[in-house]
Image 1: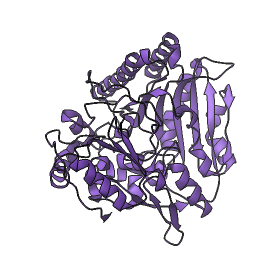
Image 2: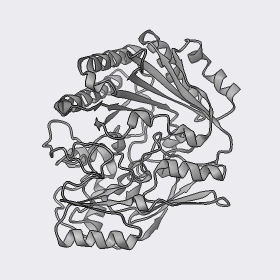
Image 3: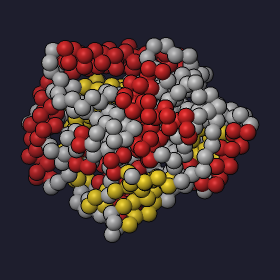
Length: 458
């Protein structure tokens, strides 16, 4: 039997952490419960569920917003919009603000304003540098303050669906849009199974333009000229933008995530090979027909204005993120679906190496090529697995990992040149590695050290 705590104050959390220490209990912290790694769950321990700490306040004069640790992005978007403001948040708005922020945070506004952590002004936790990219390893963040921007106008957004023969043309536009959009536009390409009556694998281009509809339609004219089979584009409030992917990331299914990167411009023949692998998988495993592969075509210039050494986050570079997200229901497909995601990301890693060997790589900032929020918990190879756990608390059914994504060489691959500094901070502030659910920075730190919550600022 485990326990779920619904704290309403920092003192509640501190008391719980001390209790867990004194009784040698496992604990986990849950913000939105969105992760597929099991990091926000505990099998027989204590779950610190922050959902009762969910208020948002805005200071219109300073254009700042403060949200408590249990908020999801829908809370932030809605309150900010009341003041004609927005900040860089997740593309799935039932995601908790904590997990996305602490791992870096890409969103539709990243092309204009950078990552979520680039707009994070302060938190209630220790060690502000470490928090921005590795915060799950250092404590419980109970409050986030963000920089906001004027967003009084609606945005143009929606999905365009295309048959497989259109993949090269759509991809050609997506590659070019990285330069043409200048941060005002963004495109996420998705391989998915179309809903009935089509019910076949197809390509979706989920488009975004922060400006008037006539400008948006002119910008995306090359895609409209391809006569998409599906078109949901419209002018919508910014607060509605981040629910476009909610259905693909719903609650209750078995799912996993694995991430990698691609070097633009992506080759059409490579994209077609990935689509064929995806089609084969969902055909052979019909239970996994809700699976998707996601390619993010965001302008990266603003993100790369900040050094990889400025924060713990070390994934700034001129490439795009890609994610495989298998979804299924039958427990007998667990291993097959998880292995498919690993295999797909290995193909992307091979393509990145090939691009570098052939001199096709873009400008380089020594980014690590690993976005921790998309790497759902399993190190490469075959790690030992904890049994599946279901609790009344979990929003996702997840496979919990005894190994952690930051252990050993995997930790170095996530944090790059920042790894050693993080180890030093870990030894000082959490030498017994109590906060080890998300990424273990130093497996040898096997006991616990507590500390009082403070406010850290840049």
